[in-house]
Length: 279
Image 1 (cartoon, rainbow, N blue to C red):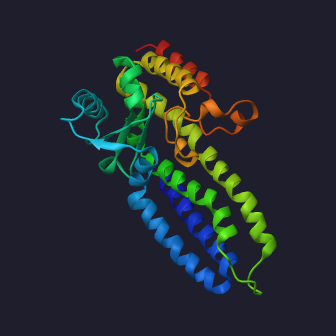
Image 2: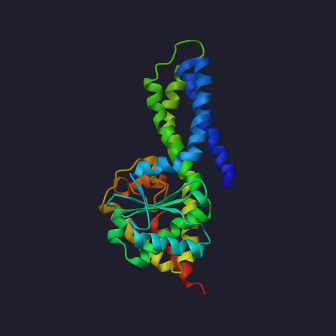
Image 3: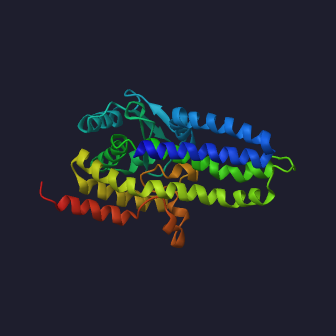
């Protein structure tokens, strides 16, 4: 299923670039758009993890630079039966974490500096196990591609506004305006559709890896509370990769209906139910 989703995302990116190229430059622009879409698709597949790390300002660290964190990831990945991922730290003060990469052998597990300050050891293990669950489930590629493509979608209005275009019979002014208005909405819907269910599944698998569902439940409550107290400066396109919505402090009310993350309390309730099941 993830292979099908990946194909759909890549095909959608190419189609959007072709459409934007045609609207900007007519028939010639269509050819350029096709070439650009193909390059962006290849770039998204092979380099999207680097792009996401750059969006978060994260830096890959070694076992010598972060021995305790590195050892914790190593211990948990062995329980999960995974190769050792790269470990990264972002300087953000808000406690949070994410995983990226196109496969388990090319995975990166990243945490913020804030989570190392505010999170007890057992809860941090639950958070890391959740991210390793994304790696084990092989869904971090689809999430990473979604982040990159959503960023491209969000930038289409600027591309159309300042691209210049050619006023010939191949251009469509009404379509240009419609795409300018609908591209950001398309970006939101794209990530909304992909993200929510994978978080529930990563909670379940992560709790199994760590062996303590309640520790992950407690960690989620802590992350949710601190996300409202400590803002994070990150692109909305990459925000969906975080374990708890990092922009929570900026949205409430109706905006929560379109959140890429399930309600934290719903996730906690599932983990608490899991903990009550007989071993």
